[in-house]
Length: 186
Image (cartoon, rainbow, N blue to C red; front, side):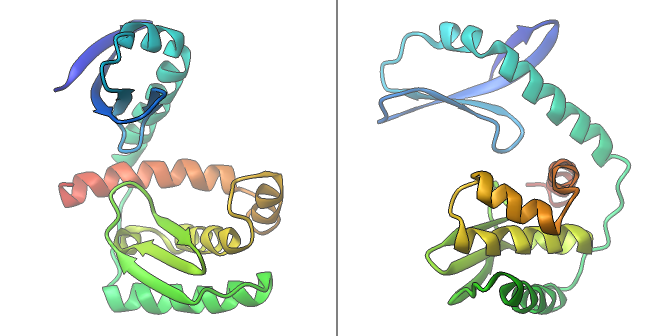
């Protein structure tokens, strides 16, 4: 059930999900606030109030990304063209980093552009809607995860050596995420 809160005069819609967990958490995975709560959790309002600044800031970032999405134009690639381009990038970046995945998969992911498991990379088929510079960034990002599992300092250092504007890429990816969700009706 969708609920609503007002933080600093900004109307924010959210949903709750009760799960078998110990500690509550807040997520913005698909652009909407989700409170993941332990079963029988009674302090929902207190949790929101404690994190209201974070919720507000994330909500503003998402609203800006949605506005920017209205100005973007996409030229989707054919699936085969996307796969060929990604395989080319994997080969190129694997040589640069000294890491090579054992498996590469493509499927539609609900909340991310790619993922890295033990020597396995999975890429979202929605990458076909992105400009090439962002596809390059995502492929490199996932290849670096073969070396560094977390977004630690070493990971950031490797990423920033190759993509000096990686923070800008992250913002642009968020904008494209909302644009593609609108285009595909997801």
